[in-house]
Amino acid sequence: AEFCNIFACTFAGVESAGQSEVRVRSTRVHDGERGGMLALGRSELLVERCAVDGNAMAGVSVRGSSRLTLCDTSVCRGRASGVFVSEEAQAKLLHNLIEGNGLCGVELSGSLATVVARANLLRANQGGPISMPASPRKGCIFEGNQHN
Image 1 (cartoon, rainbow, N blue to C red):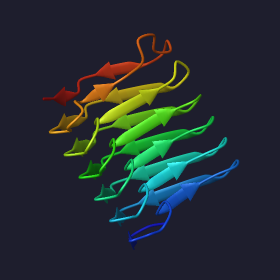
Image 2: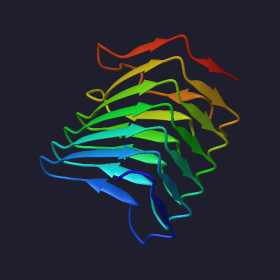
Image 3: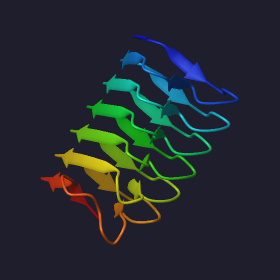
């Protein structure tokens, strides 16, 4: 999807599932009744230069063994965490604005989820910038991020 305006969806505005590869560029996903974007199964979700805002659940949720690359995107004003990574999922977050979400900016759930976050701005998220398990998986990298 490119140059789309996706809004008021009952489920995720964008979903990648199974073994699919989904690319989303220059698109706004907003005001959904659930999350903005969802990656499940063994899928790959590439998101570039998008705006994800005002969704009822996580702006971007990555589960199962799926992989997310989120670049130059704003994830703002959701009622839950900006980016939620769980199970064995992997997320690469590069140069994003993650702001004003109801829970954390970036939330890891479980000890097998992996996040590489570089040069992101995480601010004014009610649950703090980052939430992760006491023993996160080796390979999680947080470099050059700014937060308050």
